[in-house]
Amino acid sequence: MKDFYPWFLGAYGENHQLVEDLVNEAMRDHMYWRRNFHPESQPPIPTAAQFTPEYQEFVALLKSEMYRLSADLKAAIPFFSPRYIGHMASDLLIPGVVARIATLLYNPNHVSEDASPATIEKELEVGEQLAEMLGYSLSGPIKAFGHMTSGGTIANYEGLKNLMAARLFPVALGEAARELDADLKWEGQLIRDISPRRLANMSVEEALDIRAAAHKSAQELGIQNWADLVDAQRYETLGLTEFQRRHPELGRLRVMVPASAHYSWEKAMKLMGLGTSNLDMIAVDMDMRMELESLQQLLDYAHDAKDTVLLVVPVLGTTEFGAIDPVDGVVAARQTCRLRGQEFGIHLDAAWGGYLRSLFKAEDGTLRPHAELKAEFKYFPSAEVYNAFDATSKTDSATIDPHKLAFIPYPAGAYIARNRDIVEFVRQDAAYVFDGESADDSRFRKLGQYIMEGSKPGSTVASAYITHRVIPLNHKGFGKIIGNSIHSCEYFWDVAQAWAARMADKVVLAMPFEPDTNIACFALNPTGNRDLKVANAFGKELLKKLGPVQDGPIQNRSFIVSSTRLVEEHYGPRTHEAHKLLGLDAPAPGDESLLVLRHTLMNPWLLTPNEDGSNYIDLYFEFLEEIVLEKLAHFRFG
Ligand SMILES: *Cc1c(COP(=O)(O)O)cnc(C)c1O
Figure 1 (cartoon, helix red, strand yellow):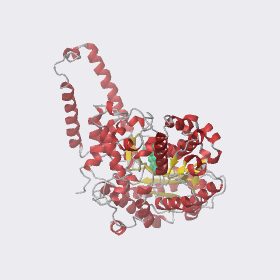
Figure 2 (spheres, protein in one colour):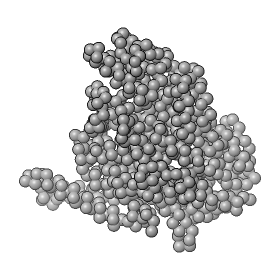
Figure 3 (cartoon, protein in one colour):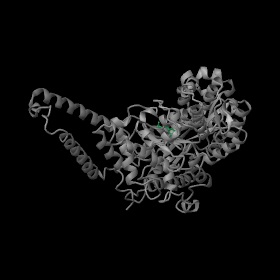
Figure 4 (cartoon, protein in one colour):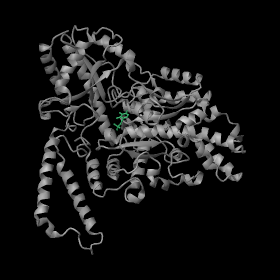
């Protein structure tokens, strides 16, 4: 018996009775709850209404539309099936589904506790559960805070917005101090004497500290409107254009992401008005991870140009390849940069890989030793991957998506900050609380004041909350699911190598890099072909049988995978290596990019043996062989 047998709905709805019981129970319980609110009153819908023709006509219409919807939904993608190894979606966890349905009926709105007194605390608790999983502290002077979003995209926007606000605040504060010409002090120095470059290079903690110190100074000097004076200087008030015009010392406001970053970062740059030309792409190495030398070059360049680096974004599990960026290396680079007065925030994009950290966590919350983890797997985790997971606690904030590796329904993302006070820089109601008061956590019950979204569902929160309650975020809980997924990927890798050797005289299979986690990609090229266009055309032919969209019902599909391109601009050296492995001519400028099949190996049932003993990964490669041979028989070269 696998620990997770009772956790999922199951590829054949094996656990449907449990789900049905829980949902029915919740449904009935909700109706009784309604009846118990002023049971002395008359129910507004008369009992006899159901016997009227109008009522029955409506029921008939509703039923026929529901039948149609139900029929249409049969064309949906069967994410639950181990035959689906495409995008980041899979079977669903029962607690996530039943808690969602149960809470939907109550319809709490987590914009504020006024509209969600029963559940708002659960959102803050989910934030804490995730913070703890990432290694952020929940006690002591610096405490983490987190909340749910509709997904990783919004959480990334928030990561940018909050760090940008924190980084630019001291600049506004310095300007206000100079204008006022008062003796405001921070750490024994006069704030108006602090150089603009210094103010533009403060950490989150320094920014919070100077904010509190200036406020205290202002109070002592009897300056009543200090907070308003600072506000008047902030970019949030002036607009970014005017703010930058007044502060040429900031240079360009840069954000650095690896070339492998999710496209939400480009959207974020547009949304914030920073512009995509200020999004620096850090080169990616042969393992598809952020290259630290490239990061250092970009940081050096920005330093020499007197530009401001707002933040650097390591990705914990890239969307295309599941690669783990060297988070530890980014943290170390920041330490070095600080020695020359250069600061940057670190936002961890762990939308995909955040839950992987559950596998690294012992029940007492400590990080499990590398050797202990290694003993459970064949390849995983490499020293680089382990060190990256070890360093997540040193980042400033993170994005993490429960609707990906927590197997709960959309929409469920989360934004987590290492230091909860960072949100004071973006707080909407501007109550000007400093120190003592800001330590009061009840402020977060007015969540809408601190986050990007307004009205938002409590039902998604219940989903994540109940899931985390019954499946702990450590190696004994979620780690079981995640570990299984890593095992699936290792098995996939081995089978792919054997398949490649067996098929070598017909087709070349190249896995351009070893997977860091649970996403595996490979490209195929008919043996002897040197032309990229031909290889891609061959791949596209295969995708007609493997891609999600094709003629005919989805029920006819044997396996569904996804695909992506090795874009040379992003993956330069790796692209060349892949061409070499495939026997293709080196890519020339202007060439199209190499098509690769992408397999997300998150489904919990991939390694389940069928009657003949072969599991779904074996079956996939059998199917691949079948269609490759079939396509080769009809395929025209050139
Ligand atoms: C999926 C993903 C995102 C975007 O998340 P959504 O939930 O789709 O908005 C951002 N970053 C990474 C690394 C991702 O994998």
